[in-house]
Each structure stands twice: as structure tokens, then as C-alpha cells.
Length: 255
Image 1 (cartoon, one colour):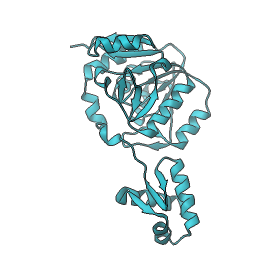
Image 2 (tube, helix red, strand yellow):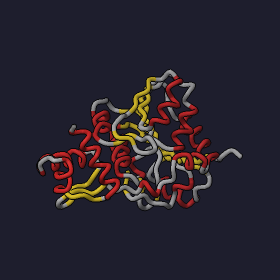
Image 3 (cartoon, one colour):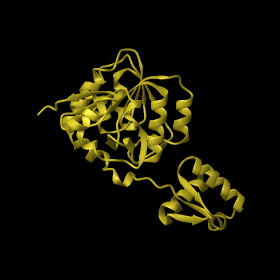
């Protein structure tokens, strides 16, 4: 009953954007205190934000991000070249964490011949691609975004339960030499930050379209990653400004 009530609260917020505690208490015929406990729980899941007298739907900028099928065809040749370079940097017999996104998806297609890895996936699509490989595949779990990316409390608890990760390969919504690496979704950004902290080595995969754009949430600075892999479409002055902070690998897309 409790979980169904909480799910309906989210449905109400998706429709009305904001709702009062008193209205919810009346709607479900429960006490104000019961509703407040529901809102406390849902806020901890990053599903809503409590405000004076009620709650509003948790705001993200994910509506600014193109859907995954669209991202899969954008800069496709560049992403394939970046993925090939990333594959060559993955040692044998390590624990590997993979972010979501179309560039990481291109990398997953290249890892199907590897059966020596322990791979932690934050994305259901990438996990499905890797299942035939024979490597040990772990799905992060937790709340799923519309694109199938893990986030929320259960994902954080999973990370807390495991040892250090050898290598984290991740993508981004925007890069700016002055502002660093950024993301447009607060839930996904939180998970990226935790994976960065948990991993011994960090490799960022970013094609030229991600540069000189900026997401709403800061993920990290370039000094916090080890390698950036990008393509030759990225301006030379931008690459030069990053080289002081991390190793940069530039690849030529195949025509």
C-alpha cells in the first residue's frame, strides 16, 4: 500500500508539477505525518523536492538531451574511432565500470570478444550487448531513466558494497576547458562522481560535439581523470589547454 501510494504521488507530480501535503493527505485518507514520511523517502530517491507545504517534481535538464537513437547516429564515425582507441587501453583481467551513452555503446560492441573482464554497467542497453561476451556482467540497478540508465539510492548502495574499480570509462554531456566536465541530469551526475571516486583510473570518451558546451551540473575537473580520448574535429587550442591536466589521445574517424 505504501509503495503504491508513493508511486501515485509521483504520477500526480508528473501531471501537476507541484502538490500540497494537505491535498495528498486528503487524497489518500492518511495523516499529514504519513505523507511527510512518504515525501521524505521520495526526496531521498531524488524523485521529488520538498517545498514549504508540499513537494514539486525533481527538476533535471534531461529534456535538453537528444534521445538515445538520435545520439547513436550523431558523429557516428568519430564515436567508433574513439571506442577503438578506448578498447586498446583496457588491460586483461580487470574490474571495469562502464558509463551509459552512445560512445560507450560503441565500445561495448568491441568488447564482445573479451571474456576476461568483470564489467559493471550503469546502462541496461550496454549490459545487454555485453551478455554474450562471457565476461562477468553486473548491472548497477536502482531507478532507471527513460534511456535505461541506473541512478538513485540502490545504485549508490551497490557501489558502496564493492571494492575499488580498476578502470572507469565514461562519457559526458558537455566539456569546457574552463568549466571542466559537466552533465545535465543530477541523478546521473551523482553516480558518475561516485564512480570517479571509486575507480583507480578514469578515461573520458568525448567526440568533438561535446566541447565548448556546458551541462548544468559539474562532474569533475580534467585533473581528476587520467585520459581523454577525442577526435580530430576537436579544436587544437582546446586540446592544448587540456593537455596540462591529463593525457589526451586524438583519433582520426574512418571515412
